[in-house]
Structure formats: structure tokens, C-alpha cells
Length: 543
Image 1: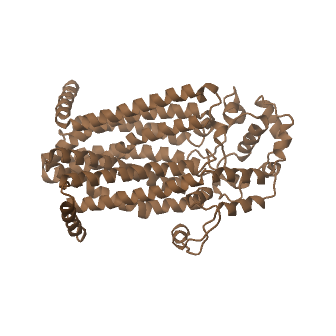
Image 2: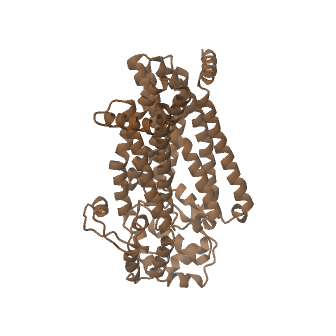
Image 3: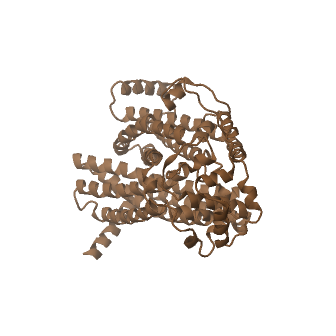
């Protein structure tokens, strides 16, 4: 099963490259258009036209890889259909509308660029960007529900006493608990049960608030954190591309473009860790207690005044370790039967529902109902503990990468634009570097800093997503659903041959896309002329 889980992760990570460019490149383009509007310098319009070509190709690649990922997730994780048909239904339907608007507005921007004023082009591009961000908001909200299942109220806490309550109870607790117990008692996975004929009609509606996902505080902080990270990564990739052109040609034309990008990038890179990143950590502490313990490598409860001040607002607050949660599990003296009865689910109801679903519960139902919740709680803590080192070191490597990116951004910004105090310091440091290393010049130093920015922020983003996803294990939906309950049970889907073929296909599509973007970006003049002819042809046809 692990191989197919890794396959899903590969697809998501590769798709994330194109998503980042989709969200980050408009920041550079709006900066170019604004400066063109203010100065009339054709340098900025020329750069905007090239960026438009890159954005268009990237958008198509994002759509292709996104479709691949969505189909992959539904086929690899068929048990998530219950989520897709309930909590995720409204957000995903809205996301389809957002995607349609992105397509329409991007075409409008391409066709009108250079024929309308720069201000109007900024407005069209900003509208496109807004719908791209809206799409990201909706997808992130769905993923955030897996991290903090808002709307299940006290259900998770009934199974794990250290869990918080996740908002109001917007789900049908009886049906959720009954399905969980029936899956355990029948020996069938949740996805095997859900794919049966007439199951949806038998179970009925499980959600009374289709927009509950969008009411989660965890989701909104995640949205700000993830989208800001994507914008920063995308903008830093654009920065690296133009830095390479400057290094290769020495043309000062590119310095103008780099300066236009570095200013907003600097502002965002300072806001992300100090404000948004901090609030994200606070949400993790509140709603993902085991993940917080893994991040801090806390097998045992410990004290760290600075971390406690940042996380809890109290330097004397302990950093709870897994031992703290294990103690709560040990003291939790209830059975599965008692949990079921607390939401109105009795044995007769379970047998009747099982019969309607065509499942044989037999003697296993009693065994499941008499199981001590304490034992399940302790077993899952042990599963989480197995991931502690990976999550802990990935998190702090992420912090180190972020620091590298921020320092490089500050340094490059001070080189390209006048920043009081900082610019003189950086100029002095430059002179020392040039004296010590004769092979280093301004062009190579600009490229080096741009590479550190792109690498630092991209690494931060990758590791941050790794910590987010692996840190909530062993659950697919934190505290409620295991991967084995929703992953495909089709033997061929988990076979080495299928996984290898699918991995090859994903890599081939994505790497070909990256190569296409590099090809376009490296042939600026030829591509611009070709695009000009294409646009004129489209306009002539429209007229």
C-alpha cells in the first residue's frame, strides 16, 4: 500500500510546481505592467509578453497535471467519495466555476495585451489572478478538512481524549459512527462498502451544512499560509529565470526586471514567517496535538520558554509529548459500545444497517463493540511515534531553508534597490567578496542569490507540505479515517508493475512540461515574435 501512497504524493508534488508558477508569475507581471504604465519603458511590456507566453503554457500544464492528480486521487483513494459527496461537494463545485473563469480571463488578457491600456490589462490580469487564488482557496480548504475535520464536533474526541472538538456538529454522528463500526465488524474497507449498489440511498444525507469546510479557522489560516508560499515560490522561479538571462547576457535590461520582482517578493517573504507562519503554528498546536509533538520531537513532555511563548503565549506552558497523550489514553476507560451509545447507535441499529448494506457482521460485531478505546488510542499513538524523526528533522530543515531564502532575498533586494542602512552594508560585503574571489562578479553574484532564493523557498514549501501530510498520520482524515479504509483494494493497483508505469507516466508528463517552460523562457525574442503573429491571427479571425 505504501507504494501507491507515494505515487499519489509524487503526482501532487509535481502538480504543485505548475500551481506555484500560476500563482506567482502574475505578481511579476502586474509589477511590470505597473512600471510600464508609470514610465512607458518598453522593457517592461516586452517582459510582460514573454511572461504571458510562459504563463499560458504553464496554465495548460497545470490543467493537465491537475486532471491527472484528481483522477488519480479518486481511483487510488475511492473511499474518499464519501467526503467528495458531502463536505467537499460545495467547494469542489465552486472550484470548477473558478477554473472556467480563469480560462476565460486568461484568454481575454492574451488577446487584449498591448491593445488596451496597461491599467486595463492590470485589471484583467488581477481578475484572472483572483480566480486562480479562489481556486487555491477551495482546494486548500478541502485538504485542511483532512487535517482538522471541522464540523465533526466531539466525534474525534470520543475516540481520542486528547483531541479538541472540531467546531459544531454538522455531520450525522450516528451514520458516521455506524459506518466506522460496520467496516471494522465486517472486515471490509470503507471504500469497499461505499461502492456497493444502493449504498448512497441506504445511508442517506450525512451533512447538514455544505459550506462547513469554509467556516474552519484552521482552513483559513492554512489558505493564507499555503497560497502565500505558492506565490513566493512562483515569483522566485521567475526571478531566477531573469537572473540567469542577466548572467548569460550582462544586459542591464534584466536588472530592471529583477528589481521589479524583488520588491514585492521581499515584502511577502517577510510577512510569511513572522505573521502567517506563526499563526499556522498556533493552529497546529490547537488542532493537531500529535503533529505538534512530532514536530518538536517530544516523546516526553518538556519545557522550552521561547517555543512555549510563541505557541501558547505562555513561556511556562509545557510542550506536551506523546507520553502526555498516552496517559490520557490509559485513563480513558470506555468501550466502543459506550462511544456508539453516546451518539444513539445500538447493536440493533448496526445489524439492521449492515443487513441493508448486504454485509455479514456475525460474531465480530460483539468483539468490536467490546474493544477498549484505550487500546486503539495507544496503538495509534505508537503509529504516530514511528514518524517522529522524519517529521521533526523535516520541519527544522524547512526552517533553515526559509531562513536561507529570506536572507538571500534581503541581500539581493539591497543590491538592486536602495534600502536605507542595508544597501551600504551589502555594497561593502560585495566589495569584500570581489576582492577575495576574483572569479566572482556582479552577474554571478546576482545569479547565486537568485538561486538561493528559489532553492530556499522551494525547499521550504516541499518540506512544509511533507510535514503537513506525514505529520497527521496514521490518519487520512486526522483522528477519524485510516488510509487502509479508503485506499483502493484492487490488487493490480498496488502491484509494482502498475505503480512503476504510473510513476513513469507522471514523471514523463511533468518533466516534459518543465522542459517546455525552460525552452520558451530561453528563447524570448523568437517566441515573442511567434506569439505576436498568433495573436494577430486570432484578432483577425475575431474581427
